[in-house]
Image 1 (cartoon, one colour):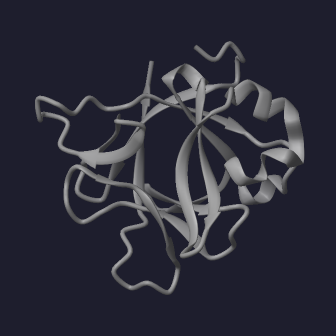
Image 2: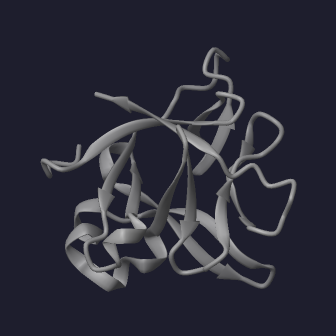
Length: 152
């Protein structure tokens, strides 16, 4: 578990109230009542090295021992979970940019833009048991709104 006092844990849900969970090293979206889907507690810490007015955050799972990162592929930016301690990223500053998302509010929902890829947002799939991905802001079918429910 992350030991920093400012760390907060959340269950993150998409617009259909499906939860984010981890299976086989991927962050997926699914129904929380399904037998093989257990909502992941996401540890959130700020990235203090980036513009605080954009609300830069780091997202960790497994108590903060793995973090969501944006990586470059031939098709463009992609998401992956990496073995990286969220506390090290919190202390590391600008080197943590590819692990950082700018959190913007849409009423009670939030959007998460990749700090390293302007205009690319965390996007939930339309179907359950599919991975979360990055989508361009211009993609009209992108499901980029999420809800944060505080967890203990």
